Image 1 (cartoon, rainbow, N blue to C red):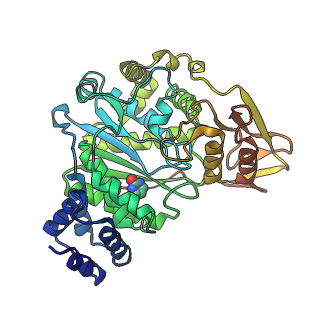
Image 2 (image 1 turned 60 degrees about the horizontal axis):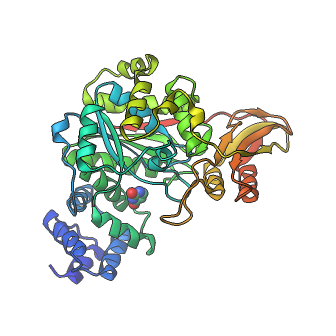
Image 3 (image 1 turned 180 degrees about the vertical axis):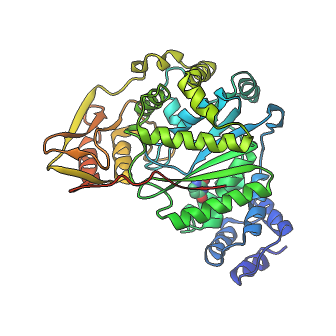
Length: 426
Ligand code: URA
């Protein structure tokens, strides 16, 4: 296959077949196709699109471009993925529920990007907890605890890493087939038989409207089926942050409170919905999710998981062991009213400025800083009342964060909380 012919075919709107796509991806990973040709092809895909069948074959080729995890000896395994949101700590709630219900949750997880946090960063706020596990440790913990979450230590879907870096600098990120193949190639390589996707929609999310989110979700479900996996997607609202805590340690505290039955309603509702989708896919009565939550076995599972990865399991009973920054600033309401909007993107950036996220790849983050939202959409406020508490380190990033949090709130005479779960795609 000549790269120029291949690019021209897509430029002119033709569909590629499986063999062509495999050759293209393996030649790219081997360095035989240079970045400028891949970039031209990505732009052709951006304009011409791909059929679902083509996208599935592209995803398989990307998934097999590096190492893959074989979890087949573990029985029914679950992976849960979020397309990225603000205050999104659902994995910390859902994974223990599923493991307590008898499923095996064995997943590799990422660090935070831009204004959205990553599960590994959150977990690293637990004293002693480590993300790096050997293959043997990963498989042993999956078998003995039923729950293991490690960092991306393996060379999973390297084609995606290279292609994403190019898309980022060539204006080709927002293409639904390219996003779907990027996400699903990593999920397929990570080996779980059941994949639950939380596709966020709204101001704080990658997908700003339901129509595009639905298209993405349907495509990802189709790709998963083509690869023999059970995939379900929940479309959830991300106009305002999920829960009230945004940061790292502060989010782990909120996840623990939620497993105790003392968490915010939206986080509980979404966690239960995601757990139910995975359980349905596994053929388990979804009532069990509620049961293991109520009887405390999900919380015990969280402690066992933390301890197995070297962390201080006492945080589950004593969340104050998760250190929060000692300096606290309250942002006060300037007027009376009802919170009509609470911009998740602005809150995410505020947490980033305080040091809770990475401004550049590889930067260190401060696990103790963060934001607690006293008021969310639909709450009534009086002038001078606290809207949010900002945990900061000696004023670092504080003035900008205060400005962003203040600007994130807007008011009306009344407001209706937007529905959290917009759709399920199965
Ligand atoms: N997340 C990914 O992993 N890939 C994309 O292309 C977009 C979001």
